Image (cartoon, rainbow, N blue to C red; front, side, top):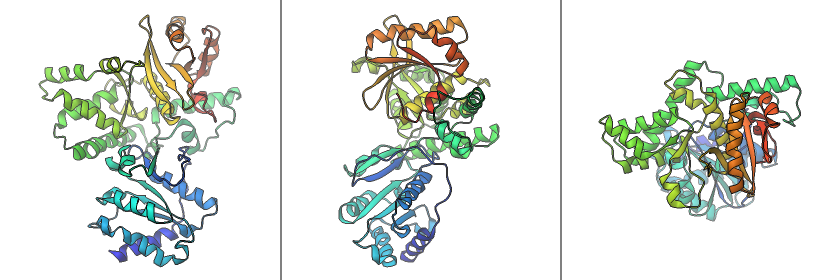
Length: 442
């Protein structure tokens, strides 16, 4: 086993970091913490580790002080937590010049393969001159529970599927420095790319695939989450109820979801399941980053619990992969993309019911406390549609006096024409322009 570890270290130290699409995820600026890189399977966590390695290399860290070690290797089968120390011992035999002289960075990928790994990480974090990254594809390293495992020694960085800006970069398209000030031809190009992004989504492996293959790939991702991150981890045996829940959630993005109503629907179809079990399944699916739940904006915990939550997938392309109607739904995809962008910007997000019974899609609170009421609309060319969207915001703004109103549209033509009818304090912008801002206003 030590020979295998030594060989893997030799290979790792000689590895030239691959070319990749640069991700915009940022590490928390908190010193002396273990960096836990989390997110849904296949979103690009391993590539983000390589990116962090490249950043340290560019900053002047010697290449041999940067160690990427992947534990997903059949040659390491049977390795135990008490033997993880061999990785450090063998490394310092290969590179004795760095012992106590140079801070060494270890990138431990798929370390969850070893039961008890967190004890090893906590020990060397406290006793060695090292910086540590951990990531992996099992539920224990997908979720925010990893911070608990590290007992206050860790911070988390969530890697989402590509943002629209990352999508452009991946496809070799230039991101405008000032999205609000572009030529007509450039705006048309960006709008076309944005429509393609809503259809293709942001999973790296899905880029460039024909539609049928992309759908199969994304359905496979969801199945992996269901079977490995939910069923295996939590011992769930009711496969029928869980799969129906997943298909319902992913095929009805942005709609209200009530566990009680879904429970009654399953019972009417003779599917036996406990209501409490459905609550747990829903929480597990969110913990694995497959879906995102948005609650009603209210200070009453009781109101938050009794009102339906809105459910969104982690990527807009998952909608078409699980939609059975055969019809494209750009509205649901657009709303999903906006929510995931708010999550990237670390906003606390809820939805609003106004005193007159209108709904506002999102109330977003940014890290600095700024509030934005957001309506998402694919088409504002119709006067009645404009009035409906603006009426909801106008009714919500008095109850949220510190908030700015924002309507995000699919096309720039709609936004320019609709701005003249917008109520005071409400801006109308194309969603792609808002997403490409270098400095997030929301």
